[in-house]
Structure formats: C-alpha cells, structure tokens
Image (cartoon, rainbow, N blue to C red; front, side, top):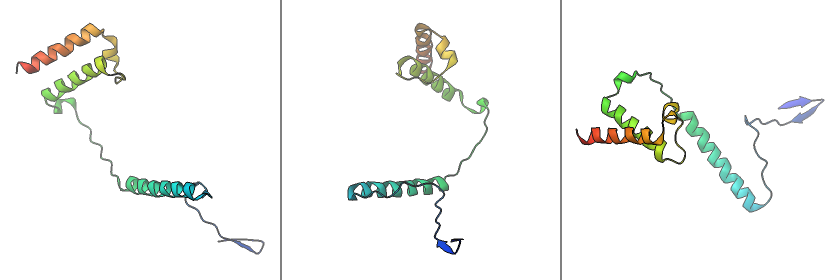
Length: 110
C-alpha cells in the first residue's frame, strides 16, 4: 500500500508488464490461456538446471568423430540451410562429395 496526501492506493507489482484483460469473452479466453502458458513456461525455466563440462576432443572415440564429420559434409551438400562451417564452405562440391564417399567406403569396409 502507498499513501499519498491521505489517499490510499493499492499497488501490485508482477515483475513484468502484463497485457490488459480483453473485454470480449473469446479474446479473454485466449488471453487467459496465454497467461497459463506463460506461467507454466516460467515454472519450467525456474526448475531447469544447466550443467557445463569442458571436454577435450581426445575424449571422443574415433568412430564418433568420423560420423560427425560425415554428417557435417552431408549437411553441407544436401541441406537447404546448412550449418555455417568455414572449412566446408571453402571446398567445392566435388571435393565435399569425394570426402563423403571416402568416409562411406571407410565405414563400409570395417
């Protein structure tokens, strides 16, 4: 409560500015559903725990590295929106396809 010149005002703070309640029933229902979704999202965000672990590339088995390299090359060739990769972007399509084929042959011959 705040008091100013003898007048009493009720003050509520929600931590963020919320949208005013709509007047029409249908709009109010949509607004209310968004409020519930926002509250659930905020609760989920509060319960999240982030763990960061630094690893060295030597900790990954070679087959995992080869698989990742194959996936990156395949993505660079075939995906409409490939991941940004300066090395693969510097290669031509034939060079990338040669690398992909070599990795396929390597895995198939194991």
